[in-house]
Image (tube, protein in one colour):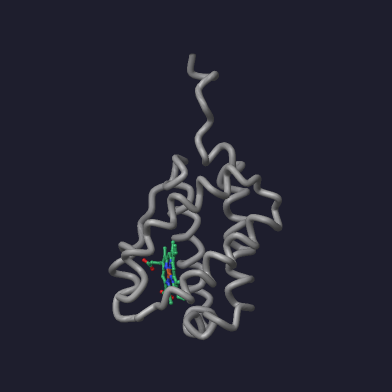
Length: 128
Ligand code: HEM
């Protein structure tokens, strides 16, 4: 029966409102993270650009988790090409995301499931 099906990660995370709150905390963490915040200086200096990144991240996580959103941004390869992002920078960003998930007490299973969606994107982001 439908209502006995395993809920999607989207539902288990708490829907788009909960995802938006995590993304906002994540962006706050990134801005305070000296390992990577210089990468986002131009973004943070522009409210419209910050807004676009926020919306793209929410849509990306919502859609990846099986929610009713559509990611409208560039591919991960396109958006990070030419940046030469290091593994250490990638790990720092993931750490900022985990800290945001922890702040909202997202359970280990849901953290693992989300990181399993985002982790493989590393191949299109690091060293490009
Ligand atoms: C799993 C890891 C990551 C994900 C899911 C991710 C996701 C995204 C998304 C959705 C965008 C917007 C694409 C668009 O504008 O169409 C973006 C842009 C960007 N990302 Fe990442 N990213 C990741 C890792 C990183 C890392 C490690 C860095 C650098 C330390 C980084 C730096 C940037 C920058 C500077 C932009 C451009 C923002 C702007 O247009 O103002 N990303 N990323």
